[in-house]
Image (tube, rainbow over all chains, first blue to last red; front, side, top):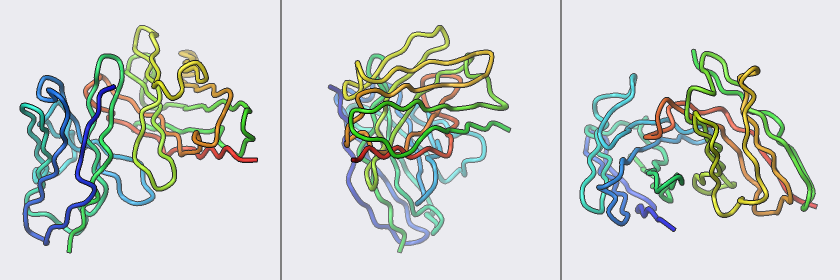
Length: 106
Length: 117
């Protein structure tokens, strides 16, 4: 079965850039999307189709996808960006989530 | 405003059955790709099932043969019938969906299912 791999955790200082990776076999041939989940809340879509931002998502969130790696980049990271982030892609008719990355802003 | 409201969760013994519902407003279930996604306590997101606009359904291997996803277009409601429940089915179950398969735009608040004796 298809797998997506994310680093379990990442720390970044406020105002710096956070880059969260998601690896999967030929992931660049699929569309990747990203979700933010704050503690006790439902996930929120922040990037879809590799690099598109849904309405209401700040411009500091951007995405890319090539080869075997998709990347979520948060520029000028703010304290409110501290959350778990999950990548997701479809393999045939199955949705696959990465294991999640806990982003700490300190 | 789009709202997805799950219900039907609770405590159930191993081997038991439960039916979850997801009522939609401001959003037409039959016109969108809809999925159930679960999250075990302290763990990551796990996709469970999908129903496409045309009505086709697909399932994760972990629930295939035990769970059945369906929808009632007249009630604009999604369902997940869960049979032969096991302890590792314990999770918050979210319904989620969107206009295309590239991402889940909308999520409910989730309903907790606890399988324990």
